[in-house]
Image: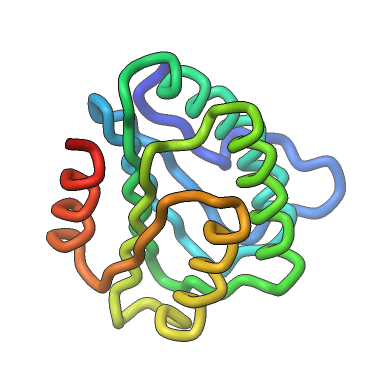
Length: 147
């Protein structure tokens, strides 16, 4: 598997996705850069990549995901619903990380507004999740969850 994957690689059947998600495998950590705002088509584009990358990560020891948001964290209710459905499906298949940390810096549009709805997506899927304003806190939390 390539150490770098992006939703820019996915062809769009009808409507182009808004936003971009890039995946970087770094040992047992999946570093993810999320550039918003996001729409439901982006979640659809992410599905194939996520199944591939998560599948390879899940084949080894416990792993974590660090998602860093850039520009905007805004997402429509439909997008959040699609994200929740994807997370539930991945959990049912045993493909989810041991823990996921989102970094929502204060300078990202909608960071405060979207923190709780994003957390609810993970709660509904029964997944370990936390969000932070900075990388240091997020990495420390992930490290604690994986040890």
